[in-house]
Image 1 (cartoon, rainbow, N blue to C red):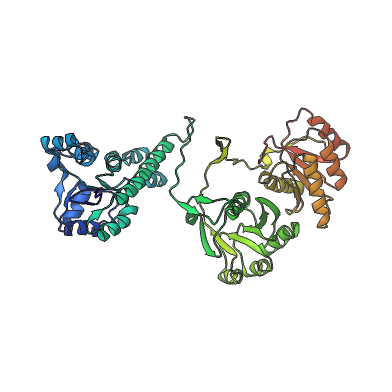
Image 2 (image 1 turned 180 degrees about the horizontal axis):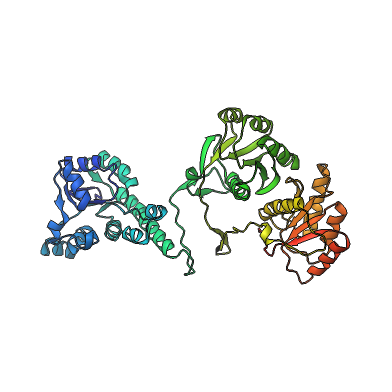
Length: 510
């Protein structure tokens, strides 16, 4: 059976007319009868090409301010009829329904209208009804009808239409039908998510149109994909394609540095999603060098991020280190030239983009969804629970350490002094192990913990951690509190002149 079909008639009703002209002209050259509505009809007439108004078929005008145009049996019958079905053929004749072989639609821009901050009424008016119905009808009947569901499909359609001399194959039609249902399902998901912004319905609908195939996943034997608008968030200046693991580290780096977005020059180095170095200083070069000093071993092959411009002096220092990715909101051009000396080094300019306010991850045979942890510990959160009160400098360091702790895998302990990360114990199965690991790291890089502060991502059920920390030289501690045995740690601190503050907020990161 020959499944190649000539297009003899087309219904065109689109919002975005960019790229439509060559299609209309190609259809006209092939003697295709064109039906249209509203602004699209005017557009076609202005090209000097004959067009039949939909209302001339339906004998019914557009009504309700254009809300109802194409919703009529003579339109949908022309799209949905089965050309090999005797009953359908008979009814087409009986009711004088014209055959419609091709439907071209581009929906009202609902998502763009929401993103623009428009009023609710304007947003509601951008919910397309007729267009989405046309898409579904034509896609359902792909055996006989061609659907072009969005402006993104104008060029692909025109290419195989001209290649096939005004005809389409079943494979063409089925491919466009698949793309059409992608358009319609994404559109409906966007509308639902707008109405369900506060998760009043325990329903999750995720639809991402921008997908990229990665070289592989977490390991070479795993497939990997990234769904999102990377180019909106970053301007990639140089380097190889980012891998699955690169993207995870970049995500961790951006979320961490957002805590220091408005601070003095701050530089962080991350490895496996955890900070191995971080410092705030008067210049970016000093911040980088002190961040590197936190763990120069782990920095090898790491992801680097700054909260401000990377200048030439900083770039010269970075260039001595093998690193995978460098991220900053801006660079001196000469600094970029220096960093580009390493062929594969990825250089990213971070654009000011709002991040999602929920986190999603697979779990068992489903997914877990939660609000993003947007709480940053501040002076207002602190409650001093010991006789010794932390000094102003210690408070600054405690908050600095707390920000790092929040973005480090649990169980974690973080040491800091003079707004420099001294060491951290990350992802340990016990808090004591995390503490001992942090002490070991600080010692190995010759940091003197005397007068340093300690942050913990959870409370201390026993006084062992503050005792070990005290013997290492720690003078002040920040933790959420909340253990039924809090007094044991408080009493130890009081007996040993240590200051301790509670935040009342836990920052687990599993």
